[in-house]
Length: 326
Image (cartoon, rainbow, N blue to C red; front, side, top):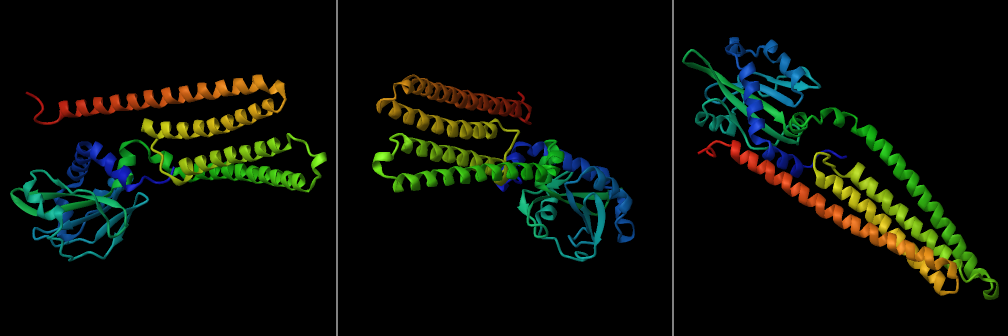
């Protein structure tokens, strides 16, 4: 449950690009009032609602018709307005949100880029402000793209409690690793006893017990590693079926490996004369086959279902896009 990677953010942006542009244009329309340019000072009342309603907005500032910034930067931090004097009189005439605005009737939204201020992915939206037929200037809004995607997907609240989830998962993984250490300690102790005990006093089945301890340690370690990677270190997109399918596949694969090794060891015991282990070994082998078949069916059907969802979404998008209607 780490933060969204840049690849995930850009992928989601392209998926929701028309909606993102529509949302930003509505924000510009809502606050794009000529009073913003009253005596060259930003009207803070006009952007107060933006700070409370849109947590993804990072910066708001004004440009004149030549692309020079005529206001100080208004940063929206934790839904509160913070004035930053830097930026006034800066020449932004070469920025895309100024150069390309002439080609847009309503406003212009840039492609995603890395912000110099925050280092994260950002997009900027601009709109020319008019009074009657005279252009007063240009309103520019900088947006944190990651937070915007989370806001549109209704994922902001979950992200706020993500550190708590990470802490719980990390504690569980720590407990599993402690158990692995205990199993390995037991196995090493048994190996030492096996090497120091006279051959005539050794139990022929003792090596199999050691292998069982090591196998359990391997399975538990692999399970803890999977939880650590999936829930703490990596970003997990709960809105995609492939993410959940990946976690379940890795979990079941860990169980399959452990059961397969145990079934093989049980079969070896039976071959050494312990006939009572024949039936349990056969049932464990059948359980492995059943899990393997079930996992294969789950992965295939899950991938097919996701492919159908993607095709359906693409079809709906093409039907609703301009120019697709005959």
